[in-house]
Length: 194
Image 1 (cartoon, rainbow, N blue to C red):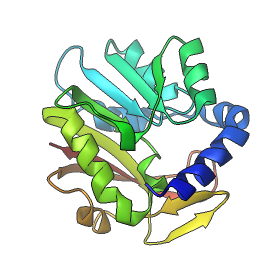
Image 2: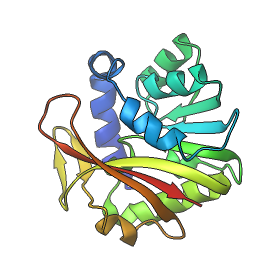
Image 3: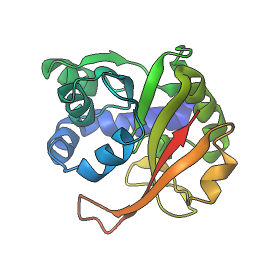
Image 4: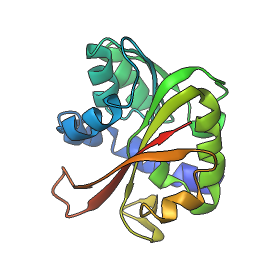
């Protein structure tokens, strides 16, 4: 990922960490959780929450009996996740060294901050971190734009344009949803399989 862009987007989240946690920690993600879980195997699964933010999703998956590791480049988010008893570490997709380790990876509203030219490498890292037949949930704002807005970089995708970046992943589920923060945004939610 372009270092200047990482700094800009991460700087936004660092500056607005407390506000972001409060705005997102109680959002109802049941549709997205259900979409992900119906493709997970039976019993306890090993899940990586990439870009854990408030820790909301890691906490949910942990409450369902799964073993969860969470990562985020923002130390404020990592500290908050640890306060709610999540096994969290400061890291990002570019620094993932896991190989064939996870049954599922949750990357909700994370990869959309990568430049489109960097998405293939990011998807490759996540693909390699999954066990055979492992799944990846990811979400993007729906569209074709790539631009800086609201202090962050965004790469919007459609279910068609996503195919250009996912490498060996197979798309197994797609859901288009409205925005839970009432910002009139449309989201592309996708489950990919290794």
